[in-house]
Image 1 (cartoon, rainbow, N blue to C red):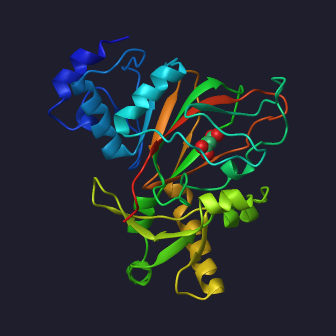
Image 2 (cartoon, protein in one colour):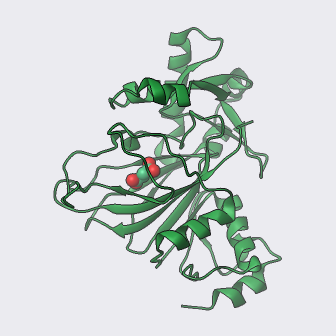
Image 3 (cartoon, rainbow, N blue to C red):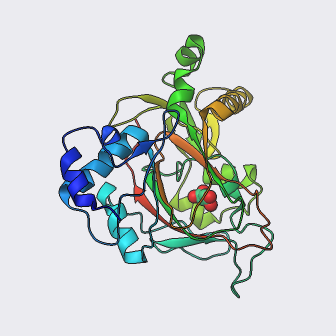
Length: 298
Ligand code: SIN
C-alpha cells in the first residue's frame, strides 16, 4: 500500500479532491481511495485531507480496510463525538457504539426477513433527535456474492433542481420528525412509551443549511411526519412530492460493496437506504457501523 503520510503532506494545502488520494465519482457526491491504511492513526495532515474530502464530496469510500472496533471508533472520532447511546430496538436490544448490521440470527444463520426493515426506506440517521447524526460509517465484513447495495441520494442537488416557486414555498417551513410516525410508515413494531418519551417528535427545517459549505439541502425522509402549520394532508403531500423528486436516479449513487470497503457519509445532506437485492435467506451480509453525533439542524 502506498505511504499515505507522504501523499497527505504533499496535498495538505490543496483541496483533497485535487490531491492524488481521492478519486471523485461522477456527479456531485462521493470519492474513493485505495491509498489509505487506517489500521494505524493518521497524522494531522492526513486527517485534514480526509476531512476536506468529506466536506467536499459528502461520501467517501476507503478500500481494503480491516479495522477492529477500536480502530473504527478512533477513525470515526476524527469527525466528532461518537453516538454512544442508541435508542432501544424493537426487540428490546441496545446497540454498542460500534455495532453490526446483519441478516444473521443468534445462531449465525442468514434469515430471509430483515431485522430492521426501516433501513430499506430513504432516511437520514436519527433526524427525530434534537441533534441528529452527522456521519454514519459502515465497514464491509461479510458480503453476499451479488447485491446488498446501499443507495445514497444527494439532497443538495435535489434542492438546487427544484423550481424556484417550490424553493420559495418551502423556505422557512419545518417538518416534524417522529420515531412513532416512522415505525408506522415502514410497517415496523411501534415504539414503547419509554422510547417516545426519550425522543418526542421534533420539528427541524425542511431546508437545511450545511454548517461547513453553507449550501442548502432538503432535510426529509422516513421520519418526516408532517409540516408544522400546514393541514396534515397538505403537508404529507408536499413531503411525498419532495421525496419523489429528491430520489430520482439522477440524484442517486448506488454503492456496490466490495470486501474491505469502509464507507461513510454526511447525514446532513444525503439520504440513504439499504437495498434487498440479494438472496437474504441464503447469503450472509455483515457490516460494522459507527455513528458520529451531529448538531441542531439550521
Ligand atoms: C443503514 O441504513 O444504516 C444501513 C444501510 C445498509 O445496510 O446498507
